Length: 204
Image (cartoon, helix red, strand yellow):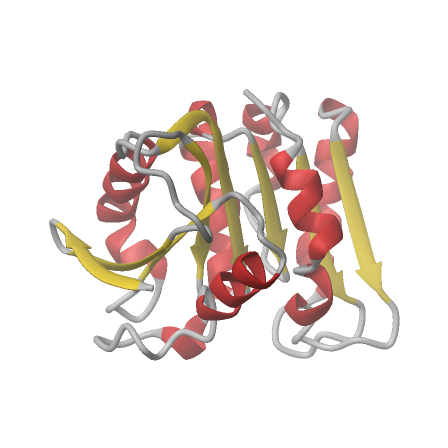
């Protein structure tokens, strides 16, 4: 995992096993939750686990994890948009296969990013977050698979259910999985081989 910086955004960057600098790869951008806030790139639990996963399973993808050094992603949202645009144009990134994932605080930022810059993403996985459901029409062309734990005491499952109700009317590629008996930490269930395979099958 490389520790890098673009303008004011620090980020981690992982490349696949047997990385070929002459090739283009899909890029997964992961937005961490509130527990990863700060100035230390070692703090966020993800995307380190995703790096381990893509290496263990020899998945040909890159992973970028920007760091939120503020109270929340919305305090640096314009900088985050700039980072996403930059990451989407890196030399080894396939611009038609840029994917967005985020959990909790990062789940809220994922929904907001999808509504702000839908043209950048081939697919997205927002986890235990929420957003402005009245803007769901802006995401009508993006394959989205949302996740939430029904017993979440930190972010109500209704946050995802409201987004789902809006998207199910406008987006035929939308999926939603609600885990019964699961609380806030549903990302350990949501981020598995099935989801990554689904992501990598999506193209703009």
